Image (tube, rainbow, N blue to C red):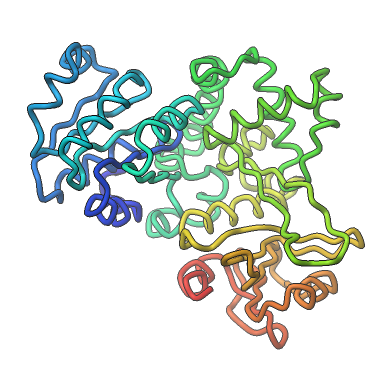
Length: 390
């Protein structure tokens, strides 16, 4: 079933392959990186060789990596789970410099701070990164209702499972594997209990300002330790920090980032929310919908479009500021409601930012003008109709 779903990243991968000698496909485990690259092999104009470095038979081929890789100058070499052999990066650089053509190498990795650092240092100017996110709603909408996608998130094995119960079991196992195995392998020094506890605490403050001192006191850890642990969670695509917009504005503004759990399915398991009905009555519903909408936007927005939030010390706030070159061009409020209306705080923010395009994004609303420069619409309409006009 996963193979039938067209990933939007496939077109981006194709365009990168026409320019860059190396492409890095990064993202969390089980997000579909291998499936994507095998689909890409079918449309690739040149021959390709795929090696899975988790297989001993493929790993053995790289005992003498220079000899093996040098014989395939006219083919695309795909190296999956590259983090298992990080010493390849300097060799890839040397081989690219000897024969620089587009799409010589595609490397796939479950991102870790070490992997990102080594690949960017060794292949600077030679590699383009493609971050593969879980399924977006526009990719999966023909198969699942938005309620299913919001509740179970976008990881293929969770969303496409035979039942919500099976999906929840998969998500529980994903969380356990990351805390007990993957994050320690990536270099996170925290024990699994501490990592799980921090992840759960971040779920409870999802969509709120990130107070490192308060988190540190709650967990008996220093500000710097908490900051380091959250860096690991962010670099492995598990959480996202949104920075406040405060450029060229003279008002007293909040300058602390907000924190979000990136996948809504993982968020709901960390909060122990068992079904969609329970989510509808949960105190974290607004933050859950906000995090979900933000991830959908990040997955589809143009790379030149940056996302911030805006909040004054007087309490005026807007959830998203869309900016190009640090110039605000649009705003959006994210509301889980069937009867949205522009609030005074949003109107004040629009006056500060002087944006002409402004939106209130809800689950089910019709598409209409609520105020002279504020449109109300549901999420699919915003993604399909308005996002690429910003």
